[in-house]
Length: 230
Ligand SMILES: Nc1ccn([C@@H]2O[C@H](COP(=O)(O)OP(=O)(O)OP(=O)(O)O)[C@@H](O)[C@H]2O)c(=O)n1
Ligand SMILES: C[C@](O)(CO)[C@H](O)COP(=O)(O)O
Image 1 (spheres, rainbow, N blue to C red):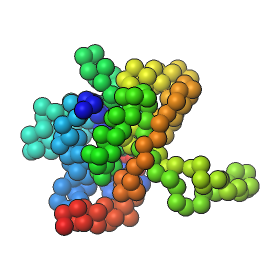
Image 2: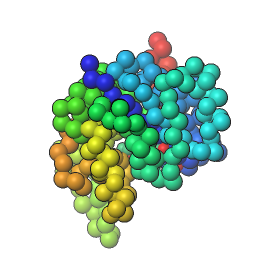
Image 3: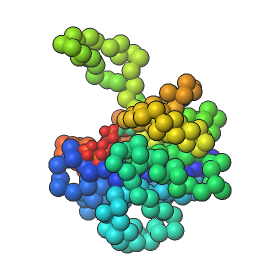
């Protein structure tokens, strides 16, 4: 067993979902997206605590939602920032010293389908290697377009990064501090550790671990949930 803490990021605006509200509150088969995501960690005995990073304007709504599931003891609310990276850093700063020797995972609240098997494999690798992420081989051919020049990337070398991304606490905190100092803004947390020149391990995930970003993703998510309930 590898004990870990998880920072769940839910402080975005869901602009691409175009739902008129934070997509975390969109109901999937009668339960909000964020609840589906949190359940994966609430039900995992390896997960010691959840740091839920939320929009300060949504504190009351989120606290009332969490209270209906009686999860208050397992969850600490953290105020997020204007960028995903800032929200992740605020989550790190909320973890008290007594818990900093454990693996820390950073996860998108918009990814409700991570499995316990994946979480445990990720925790094991992160404990051993200090930095790891779930990812899947790219199945589409990827083109890079720059200055009207199009080139095809070597698909055999490409992986689609997912979350959770898991780390030694002190390593990822140092990576975030360096990013703040240099003004680097990445789209995931592993990129900050790459900037330190540190080794990172990929743990093969599943194509089901999708990030719900646009309205089309909601339909796909409900199909996955219905299959899980069969
Ligand atoms: N300032 C931010 C931005 C994003 N996130 C979280 O990071 C995850 C991945 O981000 P994304 O899917 O882009 O969510 P949004 O930023 O809400 O979406 P959009 O970019 O369409 O507004 C989401 O769970 C989101 O809530 C966050 O905690 N704080
Ligand atoms: C972290 C991530 O989910 C890895 O694929 C992705 O970069 C998040 O991107 P977003 O635009 O913040 O959703």
